[in-house]
Image 1 (cartoon, rainbow, N blue to C red):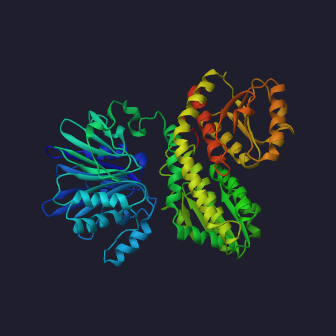
Image 2: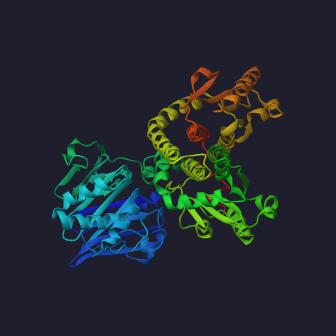
Length: 604
């Protein structure tokens, strides 16, 4: 995964242009950077792992002695952040270079086949196989664009790819669900992952549609639909003037990273279904199936995702798994850890100090570690016996949004696959859940805008408040805890997550017009009556009531209606809470992306 930035100019590429483009794409990845450009005897690659600022000190990305270049900033979703896995990547002969964004689903099968045919793959990334496939089909077809279309038709997943081929005056591309735009400037033509990265460089940009491939050069842009081979005229694509305030350039046009990342949730949960490779999911499930006892260890949003997962494991795998705060683990659980114990350690960053400490202590006592992380180059990945990448992509804002939802999706897959070994699930059941995640991803792309519009209207009409309860029951109880955490982080107001029944055992006494309540309708039928009882009691106290409902038939005050999908309901119900927290924070003028006193990962 990462950001793609290609440029073709009428003369030598201006000094610093490549670094400018990559810097604007850093929100897409910061684990490595590189550039490839043609030279007299083929292609030259300059790259290094690490943050762009450090890469620029190691290799010269400022001065590119060419009029064509293809650059990339990487997020390590498959393969550690090391030199071999840093883009650009090449074919066997170094005559085809590729950079990519997203995840290729059928990577393992093609890698195995290519190696049997004698191809030498040097990295552990999925993107590299695209260069070798293009090499293979170009040799067979003798036609570069036909070979490109064949690569696009065979590779599955959610990705975009860009290629430089020695001796070809242009940049080739494939778009398959991950964004690519063509920018037209006065002296240069651009290919980028993001429209806003072209601020001040291109006047007009054309949005490449899904399932398209082609070649761009200074003189022409040739595009085809992958499914039919039909030629598409550039002028028929949606075009936009590249006019953004500079403050939006590095946030893909959004005012804050948090809002951008909420809107990226649909793609994040879809990528999770691709990022987790079957052989590692099978191994992790076997480990949990054979365990004496299993604990989910995490902090903050990851702990809340672990609480949701405990419901999944109970229903789908018939297992009672204990979620525990990593900060509390050494005092409450450690003494019971022995050979046969399994820790499912969850950390978005993979660097959370309490999680790493708990993992090390548990390993000393013979425990096996299953890591779940968004950072494959992290300490957690290194310390784990097997780890599962959630594939959410980089998350810049301190309040976790898309990574929380993607973690839930990853743990849902793990619970379902474990259920296969326990006889509670079949492979058909597991595949049904994968399809449910992917279908929900498609629905959410349309729903998020509707949710945001509704919540913005609600927040603008509400009086200011600085205390709130967020209450849920059953599988929405952890979502209530997460919603309260987001209100603290993004809006900087006092919020408390409460179980619906517990709200009636003391906390209700504080509820008033100045102390509102947010309720999440339970999914479980037995909890519905309790929910309606609490709604009545809150309204009797003349308090503001904001609720998330599966259908508006149960709406009694200010509501947002969401689809009631059994296993994905926690993900769907979370998004209105995240948007509510964000919009309250905007209304109060809070530093949303960087709350005071907080960091993205507590590493000490």
